[in-house]
Length: 165
Image (cartoon, rainbow, N blue to C red):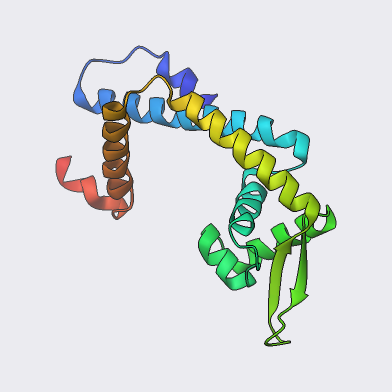
């Protein structure tokens, strides 16, 4: 992993290098979590994106319109269409016309989709709990606060640090 390799490099002990090192540590940790997540979902022929769709649909027994599903998943409608096509092909969900408006589509889980979502949500939440187990409640709150600060800073325009040069 490229970030992990960079962590081993010798760097001077100044704040710029310390910031880079922390960023690489964060990126390496995120990458490790992503890889582990992908390995856990692979036996079900699911990606993280497909899992998110199953999770969202599990919360809505009556199903969801595609535009609401895309909005809740934080993805474009075009991306959602591809995910729905694959999930439908694999038997996890179906798309039906709405009973109230035949022009509208409602996406619902099949029995296979419901069973898979129920099992995976339980397994996934236990796995995530195991990742967080080394942290006490105060550390979890601190981590959340710190990640929120980094998230906010990352959303600022790319030239936000020009004045520090």
